[in-house]
Structure formats: structure tokens, C-alpha cells
Image (cartoon, rainbow, N blue to C red; front, side, top):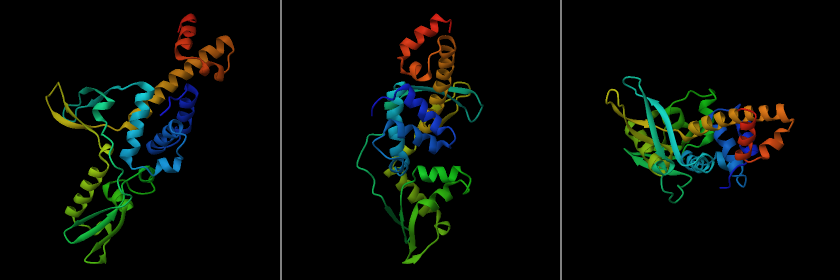
Length: 243
């Protein structure tokens, strides 16, 4: 993955801003991996997408990640600090396009969730929830040769499908063992690289726009000229004007 210029990253932020999380992630990946079409990126399983987002985050802001999460018991803000490498799942063979589970007399063929599924559920056109996601991903479900609706699948069959999805796409679910220093409560805190990286890019973009405004107002330079400067050089000019 090549490093993005300030102008490219700012353009990705602008392109992704109107969308939900799935669309924003695709806007960032589209800028970082221009050799891959947005359609191809949208069809990637969520974990494969997130592996690319981790690479983008590492190449853009570095490997160290820190943030705050609220303790579910007492509400205290708990700091999380880790490296991208700590949560990166080693890459293995790509999962088949269609997987199959046989359990309790049922044979279910299904695919892994991707950005299209996340976008559809986030849009409000369909009720969000595990059942709706499963309904989108199941290709065919049969019991003793007869067709079965997804909503009719027994809990143990649904559990087997979920386990198979997680095993085939482990990067899609990242949880961090966390302990609250205030009350001692321990839990697994989920980490969503798509949401986290977007917040970082948005904060960076807002700072950069303020810097561009300052330099353009004082020197009359264009946005293109200012963005073409190295961050080091921009900062030196900002220091000269008291920023």
C-alpha cells in the first residue's frame, strides 16, 4: 500500500462524509488502493476489509493505537493502548465464496458478510440485527432436501453458522481483554477499526482545514499549494504566524 498524500486523504474524507460507516470505509480504501475497484472492495468479507484498514491506519498514523472505552458496570472511562500488530490476524488462504454447515439434519450454504450487507442494514431499509444479517448471507437452507426459511433455522444451526463465519473471517471480530481500574470489572471490549480510523481521519481533516484557512488568509496561497507542502514545512509557517 502506498502512502496517501494530504490531498488524497482529504479527498477520501470528503467523499466518505455523506455515507454510513461502511461507505466511509470504502472511500478510504478506494483512495489507498486505487488499483482495486470500489465494487471489488465492497465484496470483500468484513475481516478482509478490516485487514486493509489496519494497513491503511498503520501507514497513515502509525502502529500505536490508544483510546477510551466506558466500563459497562460503573461508566468510568478506561484507556486502551495497543499496537496494530496486536490485533492483526495472520493472513491465510482466502475463504471460499460460499461455505456450508451441516447440523441437526440441516444443510446451509452461506457467504461471509461484506460492506454491502453493512450498508444495507445501516441504511434503515432493513431492520438491523443478527437475524437480518444472516438472512442476507444465507444462499440456501435445506432440511432433508426441503427448503427452509432462515427464520425457521434452529438456534444450534444458527450458532454453527456464526461459528463458521468467525473461523473463516477472524479479523472481522476484534475484542480486547479489558479491566476497569475503578471497579475491577473485566470484559471483552470490541474494537471497530472502520469507526476508529474514520474518527481519526475526521479529526485530522478538521485540523488541516483550519491550517489551510490560516495560511491561505495570511499568504494568499491556494489550497493545492498548501497541501503540497510537507507537514513539517506547513507547521513551520504556522509557527511563524503564531499557531
